[in-house]
Image 1 (cartoon, rainbow, N blue to C red):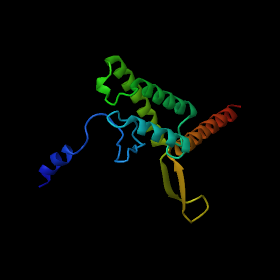
Image 2: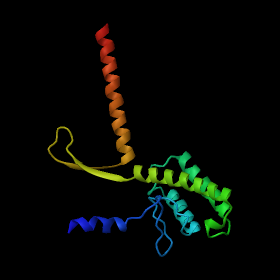
Image 3: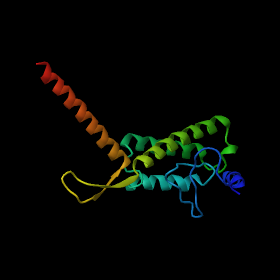
Image 4: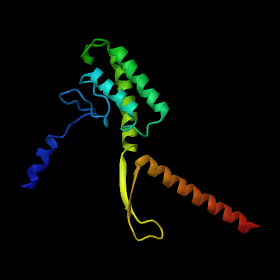
Amino acid sequence: MCKWMLPVLLAFLPLGPVSANVTANDAVALDKGVDLGRSFEAQRQAILQALADGEVYKEISPEDMQIVRDSLARMSGLLGDVQDVGRLPELTRVEIFNEQGRVNALLTRAHADSRLVCRREKPVGSNRSINRCMTVAERNRERDNAQDLMRNQKKSEELINVR
């Protein structure tokens, strides 16, 4: 029975590049980026609003945020009033798809870094567990800082032992 279920499940998986899903009210799935097969203007507005509120893309750098805004503006200018990208000249389509790729890469990375992860931890010297919630980027920074501290401590100990 399981032999035929895998092909059936695989048939329902979407194929092709990662794209945003637009629901009936033209909202955008902000974790995936822009999909030019849907209403671009609604997606652009949703992305700009999410960038402004600072929650969905909490860990996006100001430089990346400006790149996204500029790319969305260029895409909007290139699209103009055209609803179907297929009707545009080939060079314009290439420019739009390059901008789409840049926006999708930045938004996907920022969304992944902004994801909140909670863990139960026991502080040193305590038997009580606490919930500690941090974004993925905050955890990575904390880990990197701890590794740097250990490396620097080891180097200073080596210098002391040499004397």
